[in-house]
Length: 594
Image (cartoon, rainbow, N blue to C red; front, side):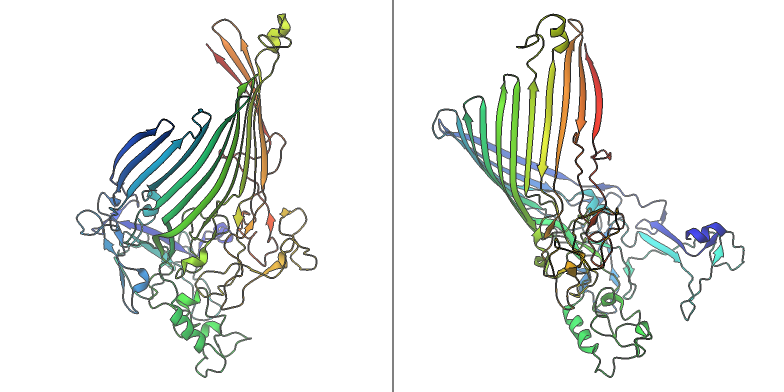
């Protein structure tokens, strides 16, 4: 029901998910119990090759078993979901112990060599040159396979939306909750559903999660080179190069993407000069009285269901039992390069200081299927060409500077100033601490509204001007007070021409950076010989500097969607990990130690 109907008790739709086990017996919930066995072996040795050169060599073998449901109540599609022929039902198989099938093939090749060395080139104990390389693997985490628990035959859905869709005015055959009109449209108890492991062609079923049966564990190849030097005055300088390359990175793609060959056949058909290109009821309108399809029709959801909805002569997929199933794959790759510099002043004369700066660049072609970046898709823009998704990583932060310090004020008892009598007792134990952080922004992508590449996914925005130039006269200027207009020229983007991809790479644009200063003033006091006290005044973001998020973090998610009045406008700021505001916060704490 909607808000208006709820006032009168009217019902316009009834829906229920019903859960079953592998013997088709109804279950009260879809809770499942998973197990995953892991075994690890590791050996390492250290050689003192020379007095100033140490070599470490290690070898690790990791066996991450395939997860399974303890009761055998789990299923998977044991072939590529896009490989089913027209008219062929898509049939799921029970997987797990006793079924003869596992969720995916076990990976027995997780061999992880490790090597590293430390060298003191001048044998003075003040310089250390270190380097290392290692391979690391990761298990398949619970959310990935837990999201597949509703696959057939373990869930069946009852839906009743009684719309008279045969002819206008498409009226609802509504009824009240208590069947006041006596139509019996909505039964008091939804009828039992019959679960099935097979989904017929034409079912247009969505929300299905399928694992590629070839699913190797994700691996990260890590390496580094570090030079550290002790300097006069209790100072240490350190500079390092750090690299990482991810292979078999976890993600997902459209498991049943449009066939390029079928798309081309549809484009050849949907032309004005084709005498057979008439009479598609889903396209008939005053501006299209003959119901002709054209190149714009051959895109988006019509690629999967255009035939069923009277818009195309056939679909661009051979079998549409499944619509865009979430096909879990480990086929993505990533690369990271970083320069890390650090300067440390060890505690001396009451002062300790450390400054760290990182310049880095992370690239990949992957998508996060669970928590995608704001405004990002959970599918690549072309599931048949993953390389088109290559670009800046969602977490690519080019520059980060962090300064931290501890300063014991030179006043009070035991210090150089104001150290006598009552004044010395009052002024003792003062300490200033702080952390200052400054960093560049996170990347985001500008989203388009049309599937111009005909892959089933809307293209990214096509750049036709300077996003940060003048936007005067473009007609999309946001209302005053609606937020921070981060992209002033909203008309710098449009949809790509049909048949083309965007001229922008993924995550080409970056949101605002931020800086933050957290400070603490602490005072330690001796109440008695055994009882101590510490009073702390803590301020987070003490200068109350706003930390803006990227366009697209608005509630409607349209801040990075072209053509919207709020395009390029930022309406939200960062929140603390505990959910509190990122604005200035001040707190006082007292600690008694006895």
